[in-house]
Length: 210
Length: 186
Image (tube, rainbow over all chains, first blue to last red):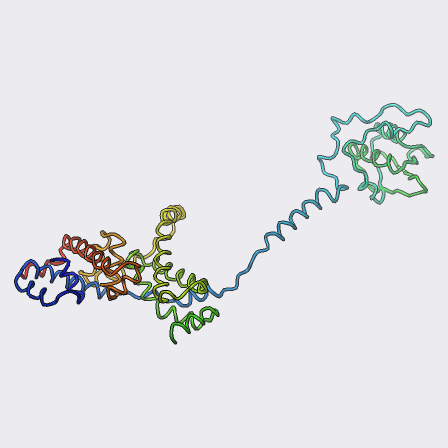
């Protein structure tokens, strides 16, 4: 009965039969009235889409997308890292310098004649090109430390001449960086002046008391 | 503009045709989704997504059904997917403390019509499939054949499904004194 009434309110089924049923059966009539009212309220419950639907959809459909070139950016970043850490090895960082505590490379003895001291001097972790690029230098040391500097220079270079506080040593491109590195660790160096000669470098060092 | 012409223009990504289709079907789609989902913000998202999917995949439209049927099915599938992922979205929303969306049903029905409000509450307590049948036939005013085409079921199945849905809803609104006036008259 209920299913027939359900169809009837949609205009389906045997209408005459249902009309008779509704006239005779109070329960059926009550059911029909309830369904009719429910359907009437439901049919009035249509709602509209929120405003701006067209604009939103069309905007999303036709927006110009900016594609981030992630691959290019990643590749450029890798190149930058390679350039900074590998391509420019002359840049010296603190971790590349030998610490004075662990530096056992300074020879305290003066090399014998014709001995090339650099052969025996280890170069672990040292890159000298950047130091060679300095325009010149001066070393300011205490009088008490002057002997140490002279010993170091004598160890790696050849004394060409000098006065009380001026010493000229000949160093080559291999020994000069070693000497400068060791000097830099202990003394303030500035105003480097490196005149070049054929095959050798003559280094004039002025040692002054501060 | 007949449907064939619209589809041809949609395939050419014609903005005017797209706008025309949105205007024509937006309320139909919104109603269908809104009464099933019972949340306006979800319904609006689904409607917009449905149109976008339709326009992007218009070349896959084979013409075996009408455009409205195709749109409806895309819409309902989109809603289904959205409901399935709703749990995850709710958790995210709670975490980010997003402002809770305005409940469209409250805006639409509260204080407006007591009977509509009772039906709305009753609709919450019937199944989504039942809501869908009631929405198409009783709210949208489609006949059984049209509803059957949209739901991809036979007319007989529409009738029985609709009967069960109405019966379920009637019981729910009966609990909420929807028929109080009529019953007291008798």
